[in-house]
Structures are given as C-alpha cells and as structure tokens.
Length: 366
Image 1 (tube, rainbow, N blue to C red):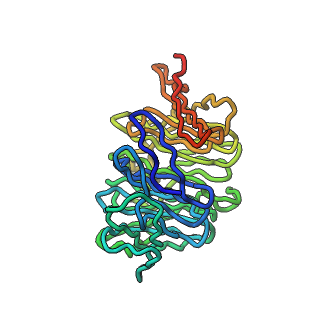
Image 2: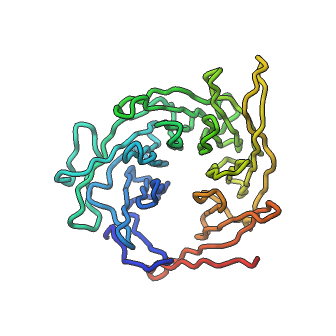
Image 3: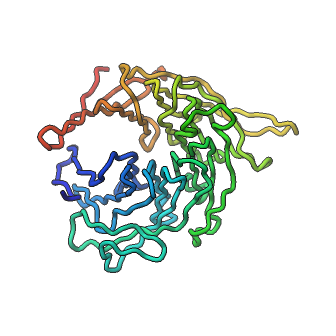
C-alpha cells in the first residue's frame, strides 16, 4: 500500500488509500487547498501534499495524535505558520506545529512529543517533516467532539466543543509562544438538561471581517444557536436561536461573506434534514440602553435531499455553492436562484468498482 496515487488529468477524480486502519472521521484542506489532513478512529492524523496532479503523504506526516479516536481536525491561517488542531475522545484538544528538515527517522520522537514518523508515502527527495505537540488543552470533562480555528482577523483563537455541553474558546496571546493557550471564554451550549448525551456536536465561526466574534453551535438536542462575544460584558451571549432539528445536529457551516448584506448558515441533522438559514443584520439594546449590532433570522429553507442522510455540509470560498454528502456515495451541490430558493444543480457520484477512481458530475435540468 502506498500513499501516492496515479496521476490524473484535469477534471478527473483521484482515489487515495487513506492508509488509516479505521474510519476517517474528518478531512480538512489548508488555506490554499494544496494540502489536506485526515484523522481517524485509529488515533492517528495524516497530512497529504499535492505534487503536480497527484497527492502523497511524505515520511513523518502520520503520527499518533491522541490516546483515543481523533474526531476532528482544523488548519490555522498560514500567517501563523503550519498549525493543526485536533480533538479526540481522550477529552483533549491538541495544537500541532510542523517542523521541516532533519533526518526524519521512522519512530523517532522529540522531547516535545512529536508524532511517529511513519513512511507511507511517495517520495525520495522530499524534506523530512515532523509535527510537534505545542499545547494540549484538557479542560473538557468528556470527549472533545469538534474544533475550529477562528478567522485570521480575530487572531490566533481556537474553539472546541465537547460532550459535556460546553464550547471553550482559547487564544494564543503571543503567537511566538504556542505553548501558552489560556481559555478566554466559554459557552454553556448544551448544559443543564437541555443537551443530549453527546453535548456539542458541531460549531462554525462567522468569517465576516466587520462582525464581532460570532459562532454557530449545534448539539445532540437538535438545537442550532448563534452566540456573539460582547466586549462590554466580556461574555458570549445567545443572539439567535435557529430552527431545531428533530434529532441531533451532525454538521454546521457558516458561509464566507463576500460583500453580501446577509449571512448564510447550513445545518444538517440526524433527522435527514438539510437547512439553509438566512440571517440579516439588525440591532439590539441592552439594559443600559446601548445599541449594538446583532443578527436576526430572515428565513430558513429545508432542502429536498430525497430523504437521504446528510452527514456533512460545506460552502465554497465565495459562499455561493453548498456541498452536502451522506452515506449514499453522492455529493450534492446546491445553488440559489433569483427567487432565493435553493436547489440541487449538480451531483458527484463516487464509484470505486475494480479499484479505479471514477467520478461523474451530472448536471441537473434547470
């Protein structure tokens, strides 16, 4: 088994052997889309790099990241270096930094608990790489289910959600000292009888540059809630409650805002419902009669998925196309028409029969 796959031409799909020994729980591309990382129930993380038309995993790019299943992974903005955050069932979230160079001997570990340098890749003259454990965040009392770095303009911040129902926000005050990540806020999102056994299941940052720090949080109760940080109270406050899912929330994605006067949030749940929520900017007044910017729910649309399970949803870089996927081997692409109604405009079918990588994008009738 090798980490490199055969070259493919433009517009063609490429099938990679994950090289994991268990289910892959999360995949995340970096800022430029030239690297991606995978994490798995086998406790490991693997980083893949684009080499021309192929993807490969260099020696030292796989390591054991947690003592239990690794549930999610997130890249920081490259302005802060090559940083990854992972979370797992061992009640921890971990920040990793890549270091390139050296011999990269398989099995070698540094005093800072680097990952194991297993080779499963292509490549002879690639520089050796290792990922160093810079910080381990262990405030959660149960499994950490989701993790995501904040947008660049908010600084080097990290949000985690855990099965104890709490969202915790950490910040590296000094980006030159990545060993120090104090917790500077928390949200009791699924605490006090309003949450299910799995607590917080998904979260997503608002990327709007002119918005205060804002998060959408989903939980096993089915609740989808938007929280915003207030400088006046130095706390995270609930500003919008979006329509609930009948069962637990599986994934959330806040659309990038490129000059729009409104925000879009996608949510999918165990009730097989995929929704797009449209939020408009408004104002709110606190007890001291101070008016602050807020958000208001304008509309929510449940998309026609044909009853198929939807496990993941993600926006493109402009926030105009939503991709959704489930257990049917199909990725659906959704766009809005001039009436603001969302419909499926394309499907990507995955087929690995005979070990070949085949993907067909089928245009839907307009």
